[in-house]
Image 1 (tube, rainbow, N blue to C red):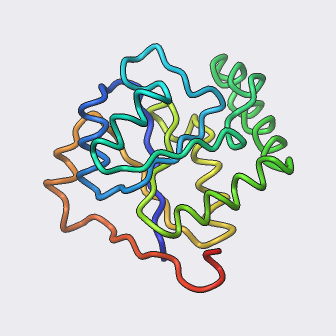
Image 2 (spheres, rainbow, N blue to C red):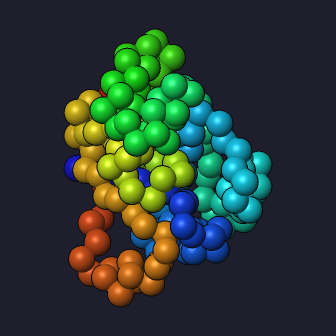
Length: 171
């Protein structure tokens, strides 16, 4: 079974974030933000892509999997049931389904991590995307937290191993 990692950058800095990705062997970052801009230094699309490339990590932006503005507003207001309903409806769109298929293919080739802002995956749409990847292609989900990258080094023997997807199911 292939693994897809997820991570949020809330409460961390770019150095710890990148160190976390490298500690677990991520080779591709799949940005699932609708708007890949950030007030937090290093996390806007262009600067993030440049930094990741320098670290040997590919950057992909799956804008079609971003949470639409009404969903983001509901989440910010703490209306998580409403947020999930809005995002689930969005995920049924042709654009989102096309992006999801592309993401499954990309993640099936190399260790991939889904990126969004929220630290807690339970309050972020990336968990819904990861769940869809599990349902569609059998991915195992592993949530990362970028505040202490050394935890993944200390626990390396307990970390799941990435296995690329094989055959036509990966295409």
